[in-house]
Length: 451
Image (tube, rainbow, N blue to C red; front, top):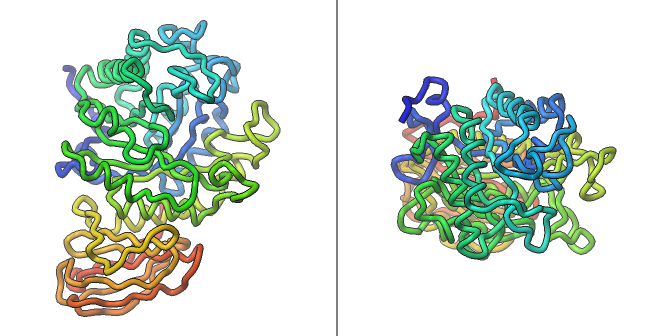
């Protein structure tokens, strides 16, 4: 194996010693805060990509999920510079000019401190299922070759590799294709050493689990990913718990929850559109249930919608307006909170609660050794079983997920039970209670500031 260069070492991610989180090569925690930009390479020119990436970096995102062979007719509809990704739709014949544009965006992301969650292909290029334009071009042999090509091209770059492309394998042939592509990436990006490559798999929604269903014990799969999809009040905590409790422990996360400004359950007429509250709810419930990170999404942004352009998926607003929707900005408050306390020791712990409730009033709790976070989805009061963290007394603080503002709630004995009533109640009135061992003197989470 070739020695790891200084340039590559600074980007290397690995799984933490406790197998629950991602860390950098120096063992410092890495918080995966993703944005869904599936069509980034395919639909944006370089000036637009600059604008989008800077916005996301400024908001505290750490990962941008994007697809090389894109979903929206990505093999036959050229990028803004008139280039298609493959010559004659052959995975063994990549078009250098197309990949120069991908290079530009990867390098720009690197300059801004962002990782690319790179999907080599959308899943419809393996099988179309009931939707997708395809065409189906992959088999195990050319999948490995294409994987090795992109792996080698983006070796030593800040890349998190993502197989799957919104498809669940139907049978062993599909599984063989994904394994071959992962093997090719490992050969190209890691010189055959899976420890030098970080990789996961993005599936479609299913009742329990996701990537763990097919690949949990594969060496190349570093962390599990599932998709809850685009309906409200889904029990994401059950999906997390399923993976969290598997043997051969691996980190897990929701890689595609409900998007902001998306037709709820794909039925806007009856259910309306999702809002910032919906994406906040998904984030806090997943993270407090044990996820190592989380992905945000917006319906206009994933497809880089431009009403004046071609191939418009739906009559939506433009992506460059949608970057200003409140939900994306509120993801910075998620990051600020998670990074404000010891990261790698945090575990889910519902025993903090006398009653967790469910559905739209779910309450979810997580803790470290000397702190706890408790999320009340709709501001419903809850009773805490004290004594689960260290300290004779605890400081209590209300954290507002809409603004990132903290408000002192008092000091309490760390014994018995204690009722806490959030400052407001009802839909769009979610709150996080922070409990700290008073002797630690933890400060309130600082509002995100890129500088």
